[in-house]
Length: 275
Image (cartoon, rainbow, N blue to C red):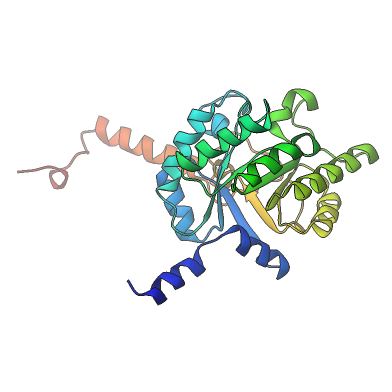
């Protein structure tokens, strides 16, 4: 392979620096969750810029009520599956609850495992001012960090449920303070979840790193959705979700048709067997 071809491939790989350039050029980018090789390959080929192996795997794949029980080993397993399907997108792994709250040193060890064993290019963690020192330590270990402020699902019990954040003056200042702390700590990007659109717009204008909205309005630099919500595979979805397909219904119909054909001995036919 020539050096020109290698250079061309590198230019098309999404990196933390290319996301920063997109913010400067006001070019929005997309991020989706993925949990296995198949969907990672599909989304990567479709041109999604960032793939997140979210701790939402607890809800979407494991059938749990919150993200809190998913373990670091489980996250690394899913990161490894997704990494095999990625050729272009920036791959980010969610750090699960308990993997970074104990101490900055423990967080660095967890992040190193996600990179070495999971194959991710960056990690994401929730929290603002409380996690500033932790983000700084992980960044010093040469691992890019994506922050997450506003509605942070791992703080479910503190928030009293999945509640919109930043609606009061005090709440607004707290979200802004958290966002600025994440940037100051050296994070390369920031997820803003479940806040009023005007607040997300203000934060996006104030920070120099790309913001990624989910339930935070149109003015963020990028947007993220959980793949099960996007594809109509969730039983219920938040009000901010746009369903781009209904694979749940299509899959159900396909399964019913298969069951009916088997019951009627219409499948397999002669063309599906061997002489």
